Length: 420
Image (tube, rainbow, N blue to C red; front, side, top):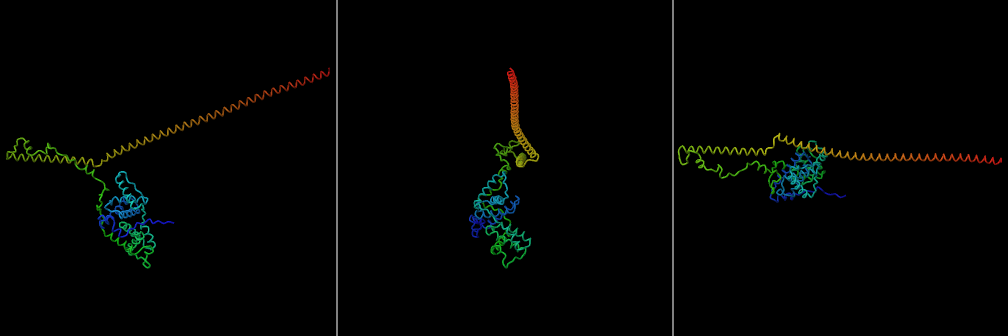
């Protein structure tokens, strides 16, 4: 038999320290936080899409494998995380459809999915440590509450690079050891229990160290390091352009471009060169005109904002009901048309069937008439044959009589001749 090693995607510490992200100038802390952020996105997306835990675990492993070969500066974290969820749902036979409403996002998802498959060499087999945990705990005879703790630690280990550094058996042993230490459950050490599961003490200690370091880190936040920018989010440019009021250029002949001197000249009974009370009156009138202009501008801006809000705010319930009613009417009309078409089709089929039945009846009638004609002909023939037979019999009887009379006459003549 031929055995093929499928789950062979494991990296050394030197390969991780010299990752593509480090070559692009991203430090270790930023790379670690982005990895945790992407795994958190995958977990939250799986919960919202009601996916099983196996799908989310597969997506996180694919995420770590992809960024072990590609840089965070070249590929956006959000796009890669969403594509990993989409690909993992297909691999674990729990697919989710992408809505046609978001056509641009769907194209980006499919494009990133092709990048992931290309980097993986289309080998996406993933072996999780979860299936080993229950077997190991049952073999060691640990209490039942230890199983849930070990399961939680295995889920948390997927946020780190343990899935690309160690095999699933080593990670499962490290998780079981950490859960036993937390609950203070003793495990057999003479002989060592991990040797029965093909693990080493150094690997178990490294798994526990990485998990302890993970719990000391704060909540991961998004850090924009991608050179292409955040193209995966929704673009609100159209909404912003609609919400902003339309700025119109004021012509030179408009009232706002008129100087104060021209306004003063337009007021009757005032002279800008005169002083005293006339100056005060001019100032008061100018102040009133400015206030009126401000009020007009404010009213115009309020009207513009109201119109833009009316454009942006979704339609009210009666409008929606009217639209839904129209849509329902159109659907009913379409259904009626389809029913009429079906009726026409059934009528045409019935007509064809009726024509075929009429033809069959005509054929049956013709066959019956032919049978009757044959019967009449046979009867006529039999009658003719009977008449011929009777005539032949009559003629034969006459001949017999004539022969009899002839014979009798001849005998008499003979007797007479004898007497003579």
